[in-house]
Image (cartoon, rainbow, N blue to C red; front, top):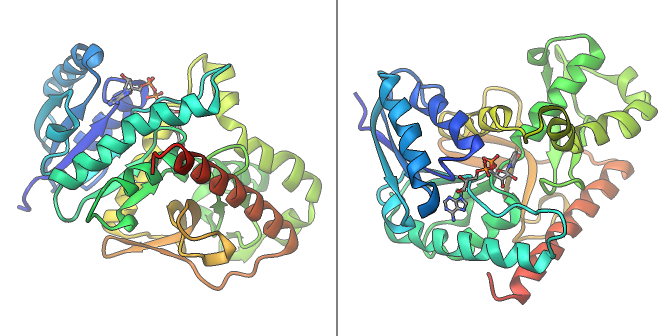
Length: 327
Ligand code: NAI
């Protein structure tokens, strides 16, 4: 058998953590033959709740679960980590100033980047889920010393999956019939869910794309505002679907993508005019543990404007954290 893979999950006692840990432990991430050791990081006040989750993991008697350890110190939690899910963060709350939001997250993701650099395994792969995810990932990457920036990613897979589901419902097909949907930019309301290249059973979706009313005034805002719609309906933010998307992202990263491409927020190399040095969503493939931005796609004027607007927001966030000395 392979050596166990060490997986650190921050925000482990939160809602997403509760859904995510059981999927990882059950083999949904790396398959039925790979044992995983879980390392949970929480703030001191939530360690007791994390211990409760650890009791339930123990009681599940998963054949793929090695050990569960709980920490309130990032240095210890990231020791030997091969994979890190950074879920715990300070998301925006009503009335919060942007500077407060960014400095609170700088205080979380800067030290976590340093702790990763100090102790994580050489093959460390980091997925940031906690919002503002793209900029939090940038902060962590900029504190992570020798770890290549390509190992820091942010999650737009939930947006991608939401786009697949909306298109399948519109077309009356199954989500698995769809390929080549892309999310561009920031995981925020400026994100651009792009159907231009989408196919159903390999065929272009010409008729659906011609329905600009649906694409522009229904599909795009529905995907971009789905998080708020879930909060409105559930009385709590999306957790199981977010955890499922996090599994999809890291599984594809480790084992390779199986469709033409998926969506992931990775360090921009300037592709498609997205400025270098921001962590932006692109259509990506993964092979041998590395993400690659899909090249050579034609970008029409509508897409150009949407991609530019979201990239501008990312640059704005980057400049703000740079101005505060957080990167
Ligand atoms: P939650 O509030 O239920 O849990 C967050 C947990 O993080 C709490 O247990 C808290 O104690 C912990 N935490 C806070 N600071 C920490 C630190 N410095 N170190 C370790 N743990 C820390 O929130 P939930 O619902 O689990 O969501 C987590 C994050 O994921 C939020 O920022 C949310 O906005 C974001 N999110 C991102 C999505 C995406 O698509 N990228 C989708 C859905 C949520």
